[in-house]
Image 1 (cartoon, one colour):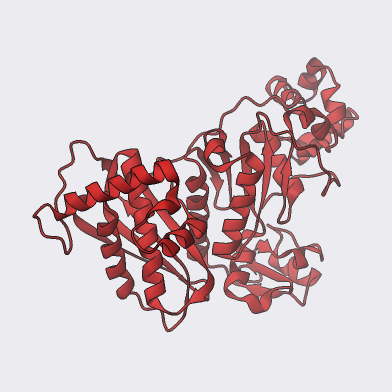
Image 2 (tube, rainbow, N blue to C red; image 1 turned 90 degrees about the horizontal axis):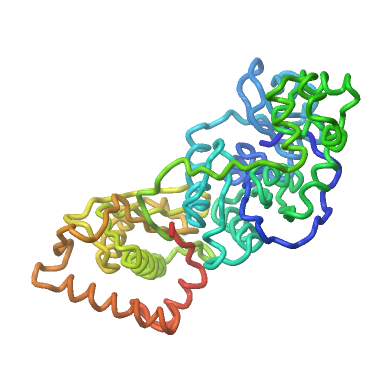
Length: 420
């Protein structure tokens, strides 16, 4: 949850020129509270506070509760006094970390250059994703839509040419919004902010700057850097002066290397017929396999994800006898996993397939797995799927698929790809 000061600028446009604006900052809105609302929709519209016992602190609060002055890190006793009608929910950290992992998976499906800052925010460098997914605003809207559709929660996204400005932009986009700050608008945007918006300006530094009459970023930017260094120290003064002028050369630094590749799809309506779920699995497995072959990779562990209508997520996995990049092999394993999932009679909202334990295909011995006999059937199937790759490369994914054309078209419209 972002807590930095911001100007009263929500809804203001700074322009739509996105040249050089390759950094996205994705920040979940009231993360813990909205995760609770996703599984308890009857609480929507009511003030909700997530926190410990009376002597604990507020971990998260809905915007309805914030309207009464409730804030994160506030003592619970004080929060309840401000908003006695609030519904207090005990935190379930395991659930929040699971949803966080799903959010980060969605972000890493867009680009491998993801720098996770906490459970509910991350930077992305989408420079390499532009050609595949479109301009940054389109990418950001796609992220927001997918998170809302699959997880039932919202996020805000800031887009800029630097990490610092992208993070500030996401603060001004909240809640549930998006803000692009073009490179040319960086300095005007910064000059509109209070000095407390700068990274590294806490209460003590803000007070020291105020003694010198510096309460806005514009005033700080127009101050000689040596005067700043004398007021708050050599290093801090130089750093804040750079930030006030939009100078932030730090790159987005990935915090982990992906070792899996997958795809998932949310149904337009929850499905109770498992044959429809299996049909979607077939298309997803084919999609994953095609991307594995494109990257020259194989995987050995097939993982299935199923989300039911109550937003409960179920995960299962199994290890194959040998690594594969064949869609049929992946589908058969996923179908078997689906058959073993207890859905508790609930319809399916989302289904996903992921192949883990990836390795380069070259040099990895492959053999038949599951129902296929080791008589060359798997290799012939792989050759057939590779031929489909060539057809799709020339005529598009809808040209050919593992089943009926209508199935392929539907999956292509709704599939959410994995890394790549």
